[in-house]
Length: 314
Image (cartoon, rainbow, N blue to C red; front, side, top):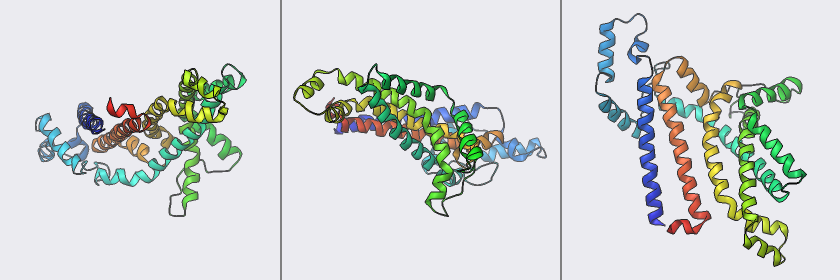
């Protein structure tokens, strides 16, 4: 088990390092001079050169990366050009919107996908299977922003049950905040639920054909016990793999939906920074999202060892 944890931990650190290099290089090759953005149209070339020297932009790229990585390890992601505040503080201030939205979408995804996938697998090539796959195919085909607009049109414009956008905050209680995030969470989780349902169906179908499942049925175990204890338990590894990948996609996908629903989260912060050429914020948000996705994948690797003890000694 220790060797497995050491290998996965080393892979986690190397992946984070490569992600940081990629983020730094991509942001540096984008057009736009941070010094000129700060100085504006009134700044002289001499003043811009002095600012570049003060910011370290005149140094070799490797030295710039080393300084930036050292600061990032201490929690310093630079200073926003647009807001003139630390980037780390901006990211933390937007997490109370983006993090609950992602977790709500993930919960809805799992609660919707697992029953549909199990039902389709146990009713293979019957009406329930075809209906479940048609619904999941619809979820795969409809873009997230389009489903968000349809939800706004139905529940906000026609029914008037919830607001069309905005975030009421958590200061007035849990329910107002949850109500503000409910529609975007449904729109965000609908597509991912469709993918997870198809993955669950495929994994459970493969397990249901195994000999130990036939033996469990021959011993007289009920269908529900065979499905949960034997089929689903042994199909969890591919299901958890897909769910882990989708959790990262939920965090990244919130960027578009936060703009559709006018939510003050990381997505709107990133899009506003891109429009304003605020490169430190773009770089900080990109690194945070990428590091979170890498962390989720690392936790999925640890879950493998719990679900299948053979992996610990592989």
